[in-house]
Image (cartoon, rainbow, N blue to C red; front, side, top):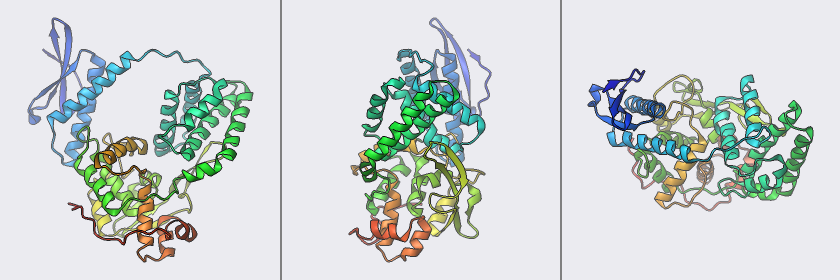
Amino acid sequence: MVASKCDYKHLSVITMKTRYGEMYQLRLSSRLGRKTIGLGSNKLAALNIALLVDEEIERLIITGNEIDLDALKDIVKSEQDKTKAKKLSPIKLVEKDDLVMLWTKYVDFHQALGVWTETYLLSHITTVGRILAKCPYQKLEQKTEIVNWLFESEARTKRTSKERFKLIVAAIDWNSKQGNIPRKWGIEYRDLLESISIKTEKKIKLADEETVEIFSVKEVYLILDALKNETYSRFQGKHEQYYKYVYFCWLTGCRPSEAIALKWENVDLRKNRIKFCEAEVLTSGGKIVKKQGTKTVPYRYFPINQELRELLESIPYRTGYVFRNALGKPISQQALYGVWKYVLNGLGIRFRIPYQLRHTMISYHANNDYPIHKLAELVGNSEQIIKEHYLKLDIERITLPDVIRSK
């Protein structure tokens, strides 16, 4: 048994020579009981899995949670299954004018320029990359098939599909201007995007994120309780990371992009206010322009009440982003969707997207005598929008939820 050299904080990786060849195990540090978990025979995979386990242990220690050996074993098994799946996947030959390759060139160029923020990369660019990797149509000549496949997906609204396609078109147009593909493709796809916008405008509006399908207060706190206690968690430690983020979205009614981009420098507990001031604007040409400001105003302040203060004080203070995932990176809204669906299904609650927490918060306050002009300032909507979309709802008055919320 030979210990391998490593940089782990809470474990080490050891090598065992067996008649079947070398096998790898991770061994927890002495203060964690020196327990071992098998990592298999693939050295590179073993070292990477051990790193994930080490990071998870560090997160649990920082957040004051117990370290569950079975949960660590679940992480190892999950990663091993992913490795096996990759081995079984057929090798795909990618040509220089395939969508995936064109997208990669577009992303690499713009990342080098530094025109995209980290939150935009996580919430938009990475998401489109995953969509294109799954798309069965990769040839530019298959534009009809590509559009139909993209817009027929039940995982996205028509409006979201249009935004995703806008970025894909921007990548194609950029490649055509760079000489990577004939210029005609950039022109054809831009024309196609324009025609989709005209033909599907009414349908897209119906599926807009502004469509109001609110939750009940009881449903909101059932969801929060399930996330906090990981009632329906497939892997321990994987749902709880979203609890405080979702709780914040509910209490403030902010847009998900505003919560993801929130930094500690804009949280003032002394003055009891939060400053929402960061935005990323997608132009009609598919380009991203970084600027200060939210969707509708340059900035707005949101007051911190006692419940919101307790939530913020429960989050470990670090410079940079307030809400981070288990690996210390900004929360991914796309990753949350999978967890969100799983939890709602477990609770038996009809599916509505997380964005509806914003509508729920606005709807309840608007229908419970909160001054409309003040509410408009707090959430970044106009008075007209609130009056047209929220006041006509026949909903219950705000009452304390039946769910007991332990702090």
